[in-house]
Length: 191
Image (tube, rainbow, N blue to C red; front, side, top):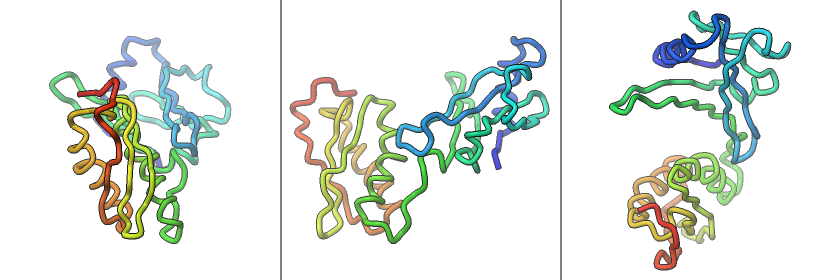
């Protein structure tokens, strides 16, 4: 079931107040089932909605959910958190990037899924990317950082507080994480 929080409903209502009266929103999964999966949210009138769209009554507006995206958006949540700069809209769709490998899947597959589905989307906001190099016999994950993370002065914090914490939480067999990147060669670090 799709959840649209009250704060998101208020936010959308403000946005839609400048649009023609019957305008709603349309939610669609883009490239679902892949690490690059994302959600698109656009204005939509009843006339523009597709016959296969599911109309979700959000009290002050209608949210049209793309019929082909429905399964990928199962248990999705749309929220708007207010902060000092205005706020942040988030769409969390746990199944959007595909199914998490089962506990019986090879360790490398489970680690790669966490990198693709959880870690890389976080570091992408800084232009970074994390690559799996190896997993040792002792279950240490060996990584290489690229993009904005390559040469970044905050990479140790990202490695320990972000990557390692997330990997250990999601894949309990992981003992630790090591970075083999030569950060002195980074050409465009974020920090």
